[in-house]
Image (tube, rainbow, N blue to C red; front, side):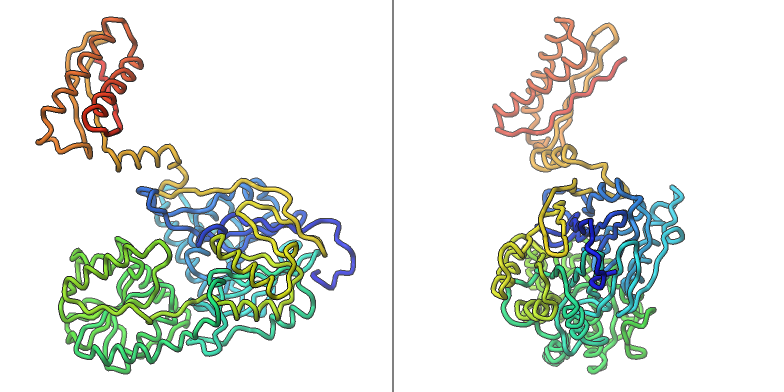
Length: 565
């Protein structure tokens, strides 16, 4: 097994990213050797602006389904949504054992339980049928032709792990999302010694986090925020304080609570995801909260405003998150206004700048004091930390992962600065098959990948055609033309026109009346010529479309409906 195997392997190790490249999110990668497949991570992506009505985006795992007999298990690096968010949906299709560290597994188990509740009518019970094993740092698990070792790292969530994946061809080190934090809030620092030990034994390829590969220097420690929170609480000691941050950043929440305790304040947590994660972290002893500090929102009503701290979701401007509802005045339990202070302890994820700015403006208009600069540190490694990992691991090949194409290229530039020739750096796209031998690496093909859209309880039942219809409805509205025709072809009612999202009806009665006349003329002409219903519908659609375009230069969706009487 691994690098001690003196026999020259006859097969190649295949690395197949099924998502997570060209984007931030939906991380999932298959490792395949002969009759064994393991899958690293199983994340989701959040819908883009043009994916109207879509809740989540999960990866297409057709390749795993087609090779299900080879699947040995899922190995998870940490508990962020872009690494575990799709796991219940995928396990429902390709059930297999799951291996993860303690908090990560706690969050996965919560997702399986939630999925079971939502699909109880179908008799789904993933919590019972999926085998799960909690792995400790330094422990290895054997999965077919692979042995996987979990290595302690630091990130913006507790219990993050890197993976050393041993195969007959060689060892691949996958960093997961990481930073080098010598003074973490919880637990120990990243196990650099183990990275070095593995590097001395020989590493075939390094798959390294690229998120901050464009940023020079080192990522600051999470603990550097403690004095910043202290200063903000001191400056706003007469205010009720709200802190918006990522729900999964347990260490950040812990620091906020510690500062609140220092200033004699009580803390309430608001937002479903925040509550779930903190409850799980407490149950698994991954966060320490001073006694009698954490209270409910209802209990907070009895506490003076200047002794309150509310930690909330919504730091990214999500429309349904708690902070958004507070800002627009629709939150059921909390009214926010003049005299309050809101601290944004996060940076907007690329693409979220507008919704975040919108919330900040709403809060400022209410007289709220808002702090949103220099109250966040990243959970991802900057250039010098990436160089450090490369220097310790000393891989033969560089395979940048986790990021948009520009991030992958930025890491490729780092590798070149460290002496890697271009042929030793492999920039992959989702679906690429990278085949590795003891001394070779080449992209040999591609598998089918893509986005599976989740809308409510429907998974994959909304495709491009439905999305285009939604986009058209959102952009131009709909006109419905209703009519009743006898089986003998006699028009006895209509055509009546109903519109939504097209024009304001009270101000456009003449236009709609004219459109009805156009439809009537078209229907009568079709009936006189003996046309069937399909021809009538098409003709009405075309004539109304031409009429609307000529008068308004718009293209609403037109839906003719014929009722037989």
